[in-house]
Length: 107
Image 1: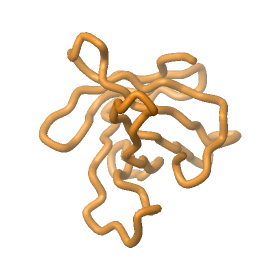
Image 2 (image 1 turned 180 degrees about the vertical axis):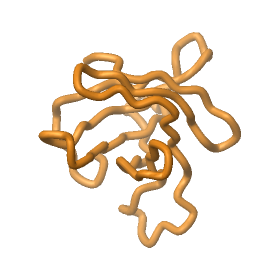
Image 3 (image 1 turned 45 degrees about the horizontal axis):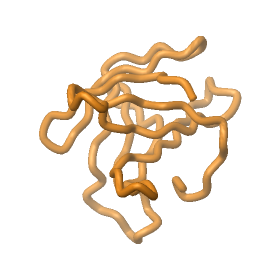
C-alpha cells in the first residue's frame, strides 16, 4: 500500500492533492453526491477543477472505521486507480491509500 494523496476536510467536502509517477493533481475535491439514485450509487464525486475524475463510496472497515473507497479514472490513465481515503491516526488530515485490487461498486 502506498499513500498517493493527502486531504483536509472542510464541512462535508475534502480537498487535497494526488501525486503518483504519472499523476500530479492539485486542488482535488471530493464532494458529497446529493442526488444518489440507489444505495449502490456513489456517495461522493471527485473533481479536479471542473473535470470529474472519479467517484467514492462510503464504507466501514471490519474494525468499524469509516472511510471512502475511491475509483479514479481519466482518458490519460492506462487503467482506473482504486484507493481508500482514511483519516490519519493523529487526526490531522486524511490519507489516500492506493490499492491495486479491483473492486465492484466501490467495494
